[in-house]
Image (tube, rainbow over all chains, first blue to last red; front, side, top):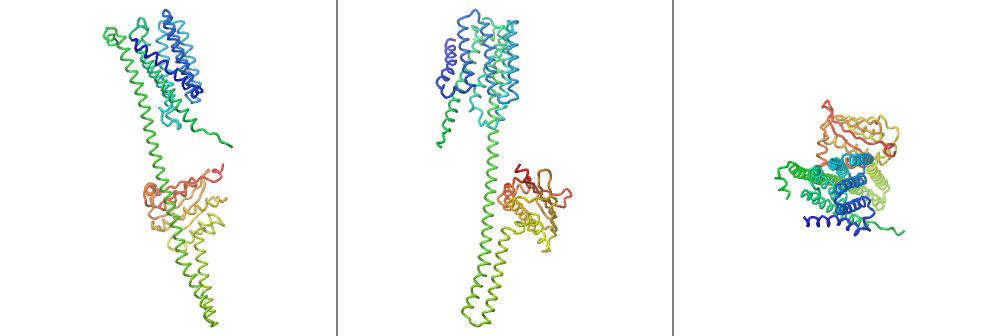
Length: 217
Length: 276
């Protein structure tokens, strides 16, 4: 378990380290900045979770909402359809409002609803993203795009942890439950995919820089 | 530890375990499907591109081959006809220098003049076959009418043409392309169809320009045309295709509903619409 936590921590730190290592090349990519901020926020929440164990439920709930907000922002940036972009703002805005209301009125079932809402909405966004990419003439090979790896990381993490969060209210001592291994494992997978995305983004930027030249007129 | 929980009696861990597995399988399935689907689409697109490239190569080869054949024909005409004629004329003139008898001199000058006239006519014919003067001076309608009149007057076939809407002439180079296509089609009909009549009509509809040929002989259908176009034979048809490609035009070969005539329709976009 300790080893898993250690791997989890390393996996969580790796996208941050990679972002700083490739900072010059990838810091202008807004989507990656969003993911960097999301990973940073997750790390902060994990520290808070360790520091304030008595408020763990509240911290997990808030972190779930922040996670949803970051994922929505990411999909807002990567989905190019002008028709779909306003829908992302409206749907995610309404979902966030609903989650805040639920946090205030129904703390017992909050995790269930947040997990359900997040999973449904983000999976819908992911499918829209895949559909758009498959129909885009600019997409040559989908897995050569860094956004693809981030989206894959998001949906694998959300689908893998969906049932855990749906039944979280039935589990005693959430973060100490053996079932929490699922969450850590999928967080590792997600962070590995994010790290791959950062590496691919750097390679793409490098190729673009090699192709550009200045006319000496 | 997880397996111990599964067997612990409560229903929740069971659902949690299998639910997670199912969701994960679904997600991975979706991602794998997307990747494979995209690869399949890419492979299909590459095959299409290759086919198009092969077709283009074939058309280009056909047009080069045709150009070479045309050059050979002109070279043969000049070498076999104009060359001997001019050589004979030279002989007559030489004889004129040697032979001082006035009567013989006049006769040889007359013969040389006759030969030079024949040569001029021959060169004019070659020149006309390269660029019909009627087409250059009076346009497509006159050139086609002229061509059809010549066919009709040969007595082998009844040929007629009618232009319904050709008030403004096209660009000369476009007129030449269309004329060459019509010439090639007529050649094919004369050579292969055994038809007793050909009728050509021209019309326009919206921004389209149509030329339609009817004949009652043996003809081609669109399937035959496409088949010949893909094979190594049918050089003339490939030439038609490559010429029409320059004008972004299309050609359709079909049998009339009455099953008695064959129709060949050339469809082009009107020049005014292209420039817009």
